[in-house]
Structures are given as structure tokens and as C-alpha cells.
Image (cartoon, rainbow, N blue to C red; front, side):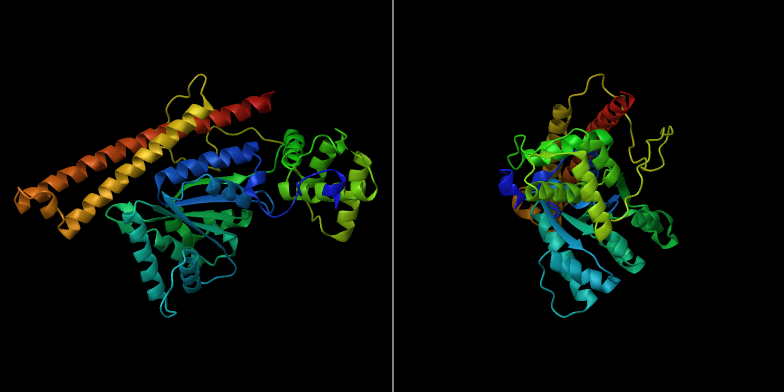
Length: 396
């Protein structure tokens, strides 16, 4: 209705996550840097938490839209109250695996066989688990067991856990999750958007559906919108959607603060807005922030004037080279296991062939180790650039 009235080509504030509307706030940019680091490791668990509507699903949808499907096979599940055995079957279904029978052993066998096939084809596997706060401790332990699947020394499955703040508390403090905690290599909590990001966010989404200034939005709307939404993206969308609807109903070409107050009051009366947590002023960070694990082995000095695009290009090139080396290592392992070395090296006796392949494996592992250092260095530079940029904006 309002899209026709304002000449828009679509609905800019829909509540369903859509990677096409992704907006890179400061907290989302930082989350992407941690996700990039975690994915570069190719193992363990990555954990992203945030309030309801903070943009976790949109962030992951944006990430997946940028990943090369020829190098990474991803499956996503949205969890309810699942037990351990139920979760195993749900994971098998998410990867599209037919399971003969309904027993846990058959499902695990199908998953492990699939992961081996993908590894031999040169693809890594990622499992994305949304609403992880719904999982039982038993189910979380089953997820940890998946991380034991390996080809040689290389893990076959990496897991990304998305959850609400209570999941972070469970993961950090439950005594039965110590082994899982030790396998978390990157974590980030999505905060609310900052007051100065509300106007760019609203205008970004409007511009994607052809907005050219109709409706005109009074600048005083944005601080009031931040107060009403506490900076949570889904609440912003909910309020902005109703604002545009009110403007269309009343044939208004300008959105003002009085209209916003009317919409917020209606939403509160209807009980659909929910109680927004009050926004907290940013506090000074201690020298060693407890929120994020210190997962960097080496911390090189930050460059004086880092180039964001150049760093990303370096990271992508390093990842591509690393995957190629892993594929070569996997092929060497397969040759050694299957006896293919006899065909590839016909003029050398069996013992010499094994020695050649063993030396080849050692050289490849050394190259992978060096490549990991390069990736860690590049991602550290990227994160330091982002955090330094955030600090400069906060100081300004």
C-alpha cells in the first residue's frame, strides 16, 4: 500500500532477514571480521550472540551470499528443543542425506561419509545452527562430537552457533560444556546500533527500493527512533514500517516526530513493540577485554594507514592458496592409503614410493603452517583496523 503511495519499488523494512538489505554497522563489521578469522581456521566453533532482532540471521545470510559454493558446503538448521539423537538426524537432513532407518548410528555414519566425500572433492563443510539457546546440553555435546570427524589431521566440519544472550551465559558457565568451550575459536556479541547509525540505516534501506526523498523525513525523527527502538534493527524496521503506513493512510509526504510518537504509542498499546532494553552508554574498555577470547597466537603491530580493501584481497588470496594446499594434501593422503603411488611412480620400489609421499606430506604440512601464519597476520590487521576506526569515531 505505502510503497505505491511513495513510489517505492518494494518494502524497505520487512521483518524477514534479507541479505540484500544488509547494513554494515560498527558491530556487524566487527562480527564479520571475527567470522572471517574463524572460517579461515576451518575448524572448531564460531559463536555469534545478540538480542532478538539484532541482525544475526541477516549477518549470516550476507556472509553466505559471498562464499564460493565450490569451496564450501553449508547447511543451516533452526533449532527447537532438540535432544542429542534428534539433533543428529536434523543435521543429516540439513545436508540432504537420506538415512536408512531411524537410529543414531546410521545417521552418524551417513554424515561422516558425506563429510569425507566433500573433503575429497576439495570442499570444506560448515554447519550453521540458529537459535542455539534452545539446544539441550546433550545436543550441544553431540555437536562437539561432530568436530572429531577428520581426514588425516584435518577436521571435516566447522560449526557456527547463533544464539540469544542466554546462550552465551550457558556456554561460558555450564560445567558440562568445558570441552566445547575449548573448541570455540572466535566469538562476538552483536550490540545495538549506535545513535549516529540510525539515519544511515533507514536511508540505506529506503534507497534500495528507489527512495529519492519521498517521503521527506524530519531529522528529529532519528533520535526519537533510536530511543524507541534502543538501536535494535528489527524494532527499527517495525516502527519505520508503521510510520510509512501511517503516512500513506493520512496522505502525508513528510514524516515528523509527532507521527513517530503516535506510532510508538499504538505499538505499545497493541503489545507488539515489546520492551526495549535501555541503551547503555559505551564504557571504557579494559586493556584485555573479557568478552572476546584471545585466539591470536601472534599480534603484529598495526600498520600506520591500513587499506581495508587491500587487506581483504590478501585474505581472500591466502584462503584460496590454503584450500589448494589442503586439497593437494588430501590427495596425497588418499594416494598413500589406496596404493595409488604404485601407478604414479612406476620406476621406484614400494618403500621408496612411500618415503617420497611421506616427504611430500611433510612439505605440504609445513606450507600449510606458514599459510596459517599469513592468514592470522592479515586478519589481525583487519580487526585492528576496524577497532581503531571505531575508537576514532567514538572519540569524535
